Length: 506
Ligand SMILES: Cc1ncc(COP(=O)(O)O)c(C=O)c1O
Image (cartoon, rainbow, N blue to C red; front, top):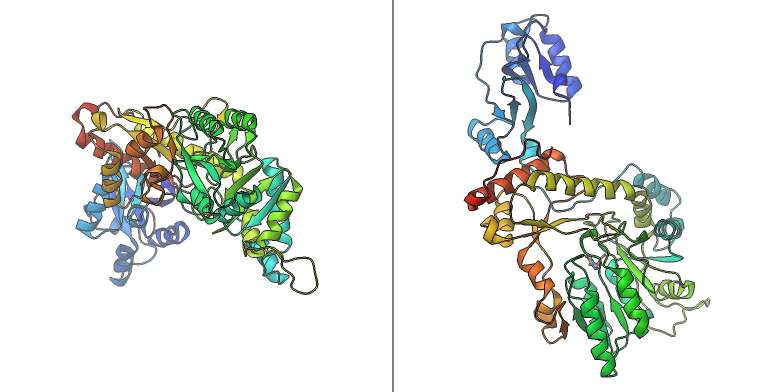
């Protein structure tokens, strides 16, 4: 954000220097202030042009400008009202003044009117170099030096032996389950509260998912439900081929407990860390606890290759087999020899270049997403009835998405209504994932709840909301989200009309 001082001018400033100031600041409006720093009027490029056309010289002072009433707002005017003012008066810039009438900020239409999205790609200055290298060396293929390096660098970053770069996280789950020998007629235990991409590959292989509930402490797979489900399956002699715990919204499940349970039954784990790259659980990276782990680099993820995924694990043979299957299972023969059914699942060398650049800023992205979360807590913490996704003891979440549950009894508004009302202000919020055991696609599947009569995934789906959380979400845009939520909750619930803290996000 630009410093307000860059666009302040005084009556004794010349038109020439003012035009120069506009040029340098890239702004089309300056703020004319008096000797006390109070706003007298806005000065647009149009105002200066008109003066020059009327014969005023470039070396005359701004005091020749006629008085003019400029529309201003105060610091607590919310974005919707500012936009309304802009529309009513057909202006694109509105100064914000303090109690003394001194300008502190200028709202720009292009910042205020822009839709605020849930999570958008955030590139650094590094990606282009790797991509240009790929072009320069003509490595435009689903293999090449960027692919090899991205695999090596990611494996090193998360502390795992090996990694195979693939075209999506879904492909990685599919291959991972295949490598764990999931076959038609098998069962796979899988988190219920997740995106459908976790469960679909189970069906690709002709197996059936059994869904496991979440626990309140991490919102992820409930060790208690898993234990009961495995014990029951064991008694029936129908243990699953694999367990797939998912790390949602940037937080790892309680992997230590889950590993412990699965080890007792001898069941391998495929950890779906599509949403939790960069998170840790007890100092170990999310995605590295199971026999295999999966990351996604879809456009909305914490780092992205526009589309892509990675299968990781410590067993070199498994990862090498993944690369083989992902390349049409082509046997090492000079002619095209095939023994097994393969897939076209490799990542391209160009996208791997994007991934290498993104990986260099992963730690920054985690810090930025956590800062977004902190600003929400600061700006909304005074409202009753909003409960943030907890960060379990010993965990370090990335806060990939800031998520919370909304208690309609206390806020006067449901999570669903809040999502709809925010959309009216061009703010994209989303409900928490609809659990898989509630999906028509999986209506016949078994489901194990956290407690016999308590389904945490259902509670989270009922009350959960994901807020715009991009690492590139500007503080002013986030302020717009916070202000809108405060207004909506205050409108809905007289009881939550508490004192607004002095410092909000921004
Ligand atoms: C939990 C989860 N699993 C798997 C995937 C699939 O990843 P991809 O989109 O890269 O196929 C996603 C995201 O898209 C996800 O959120």
